[in-house]
Image 1 (cartoon, one colour):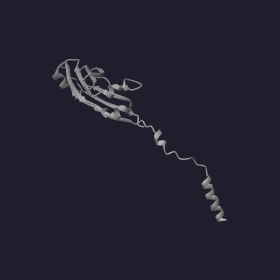
Image 2 (cartoon, helix red, strand yellow):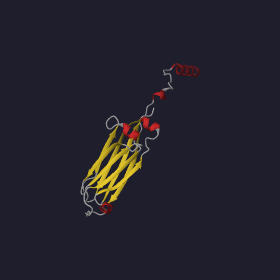
Image 3 (tube, rainbow, N blue to C red):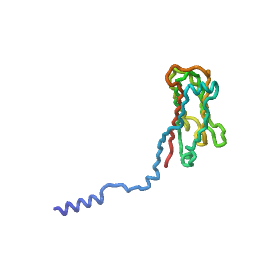
Image 4 (cartoon, rainbow, N blue to C red):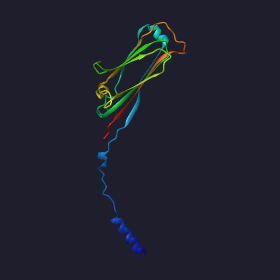
Amino acid sequence: MKTILIFCSCLLLMVSCSEEQDFNQVDDLSLQPSLASSLLYFESNEDTMNAAGTGVFFSEVFTFEAFKEKFIADEVVEGTITYQIENTTSKSLGLLIEFLNEADVVLYQEPFAIEPQPTAALERQVNFGPNGESLEILRNTAKIRISATNEGDGSSQSTLTDPKLVFKSSATVVLNVE
């Protein structure tokens, strides 16, 4: 009896329902990971702004090599840059973010008009890709220039403790990996 049961079990295992395995499925695999990173940060106190007077009190060019690798530049499908600005000074300020190519040609500008305190922190998102600005801007950006101007006077002082301008930015990109 045991022999018959073992024989039937083996027979069922050999003729059981199963699909032929397709080990080429990996060729159809497509991933779109999202990568996030801080981009730029700076702050300037009100004393520095007063010492510079009206006009530009901060200007800096930063190297941007995120898309220097061909793989990254070719596979990015969308991106978002988020800016956060907080002004606790008594000054109206202007802020200009410029994306530059290798030849210092401006590819894109993002201007900000910032009111004096007390104001809420400003947050702005800029999309690149199918639902926003051209991805070619990001792909061709080699430098980012930030310029900050004092649109107010050169002597007023906020009543808040440690009044300053704080600028933060971050970027998120989605890549197509096959």
